[in-house]
Amino acid sequence: MKYDILVSGYGAIAQRHINNLNNLGIIKSLTIVKRVMLEDQPNYKFPVAIYTDFKQAINEKHFDIAIIASPASAHSDQLHQLSNLKIGCLVEKPITLNGHQAQELYQFTRLKNMNCIIGYDLIYTKGFTEVSRILHSECLGKIWHINISVGQFLPDWRPSKNYKTTVSAVKALGGGALRELSHELDYLLALFNVSNIEFSAQLVRHSILTMDCENEANIFGGLSLRNQAEKVSFSIHLDMLKRFPSRYLYIEGAKGSLTWDLIRQKVTYNSCGEELKEIDVREDSNQPYVKLIQTLISQSANSVTSKQALLRSVQVMSWIDSIEEAASNKCQVSFSLREFNG
Image (cartoon, rainbow, N blue to C red; front, side, top):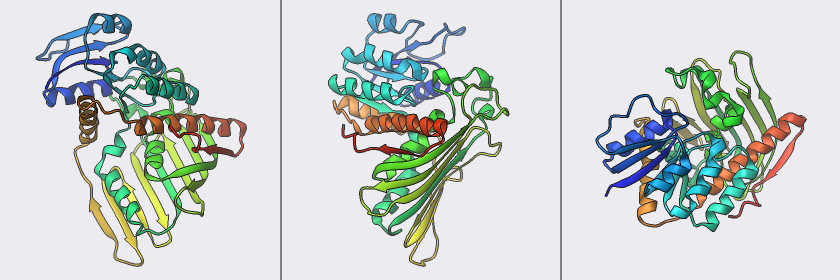
């Protein structure tokens, strides 16, 4: 089956989604909404329409599926405009600029029974699946520490563009380490049944890069999990400065430990003194994005409305608000997830 597709935005991630849809052979027609008109017409084998006005596009065209890959500042307004079309939507992260907007948008999409999935791709990786399986086996015992770290040099993210003009470097568009690297916050909440987070935070804007928002974030404290009585100490490091990229998750438990190296795509763990086990979770780096699209298509075709990923994205944005509060006031903050019951 083929679909009439709307894509808002035409940056690297939007073009990736278009290419994946094209490779799946499911595009009947494509409409692109971009702030400025493209100089060159994209060379695709299906009809392509290009607009600079989102409202005009949805008034003049028919759509089965929408991908919102515009700056985060535009997401809420564009989803409101799409609400009466009753179509599936993929919304890139961050879902909005702040937690208040995210909660309002979540309630609105639930009221309108909109099917929205979020562009947090790490939960679609083989690595995430293996880590989740190991945790559910309880072979690590009670978890007592979690360490998450990611570092990637921002100018290398999109080598063909001046990083200073990208959304990643502009706070008003949803830039900064906290929002751009919020994948780590999302997969933490997806892996662990967290009920409350007590933490301190540090946000730093190093002059190494020219941007108006933080390019390093450090969050540390304790997690309360619903499935164990004892709290879990944790630390999270996010930066846009590291010349040699690194990305990993360390988990320490009473019976063993686990490492997920997201760059090398390997999961290693041991339990109760057993020999270290290594699991190869290598896959094409594009595959998680393909799974995102396939999930969107499947849910849309079967009229399935899943709220889990959307709700978690609201939790992430609300947590980011609390992180900024903790960093600004130089204090410890308690953030409860109990209020997010959908």
